Length: 198
Length: 378
Image (tube, rainbow over all chains, first blue to last red):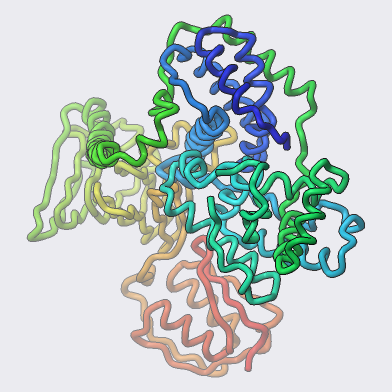
């Protein structure tokens, strides 16, 4: 996934888009599409549905550009909006109040994708495999938190915002997930007494 | 708070490393520009060797073969979006509070937000129940409108009521229940229809040219010359239809039999004697199972039976005849099993338990059928 340090550029594009610059809006879409798409396909294998939701999202953003506020968290704003859209679309097709029950498809199944040949260090491949196993065993929510933390580089507040849950529960999910992962490495963790300093 | 440019002294814990872009780049991409920095850092912090190793492992574990969307497909999607903009209407409301955008973080922490949220939730819940009650009235309203004039027979909490409908069918209306039915029943009716709120037992007079329909807010039951019980209180969690005699079909109210054509034809569930349908409100689905207390088909039948070295096959078939419930078992495995037993007052399930215990097996009810699992007899 793209390592973007576009905060400044992002903001610029966002403000341009808000003032009605379609080219800037196009660039904004272009920049965020890969992450949005990847995140969206964590909830459904139906790639077309995700594309559909994104198209709707873009259209709404455009139409409402004048009432949308300035934000320095463009990416998180978009991720949150997409998540909401997906919740509704997927939730609607299955009916009823299972509002929150988006299923985060485990992205962490199988063997580590980095070829084990590259992992030269002794015991590292084995350790990675154990952790991969532990990852696959985490709850959907824990996986989603880890995903957002690792891939989207979102901090606790931002994750809480994207997932529409409170800060404490994100913190707990992350904490529990990391605890399980550490446990899977087999050693009691006197090294790991530090909580994430986010 | 985050980002690649931390001071080295900040990397104290495993998660500091794992969630550092810089460290990750170095692990996954050895010849990155961060190479020198990290080699150096590791040398200066030998006490962190274990953490570094674990962090590396975790990064490998977290790393995905992300199926990246091809560039041209992204271009295509962006282009599509821009084309749609041109045809866009002036204004459509965004979903919910997204409009407030940049302020969310602050908003979430403010007391006012939470007070408003609680209020909104309260209104939402009230609205939901209003909607449910209101919506359920609608079905009855439709019924009333199509059958003017409609008569209502109601019971209170003190007692049941038994009466006959104009066609001669018998209804035993349970407590706190209402039955609505047309005032007049023409001779050439093609369907006899009633609407039930509450619970009732129906014993229908046979008339093949006019099937009998019991409507409730959730399910519709259709039968001809049969008897069955319906339990459908508006605010109750469960709606059930229990067949006692003959065959009935059960449909979801949202999917009445006349809509069931072609591919949807299976939308109804057919029940035999002592089978039951439970309406699952949450999933909006019908589940087929067995009556809680199966009753013998023929009330006068002698339920006392004595088995003396009787083949299991025969016992099951007798049980089936008595209650009309299908029983499946492995004929071959139980072929040689003989059973000696006396059964008197036991209920259907007690009888099953007894038999299963004797042969060292077990049973389960699936889709209204009893499945006996046994590998042979002990």
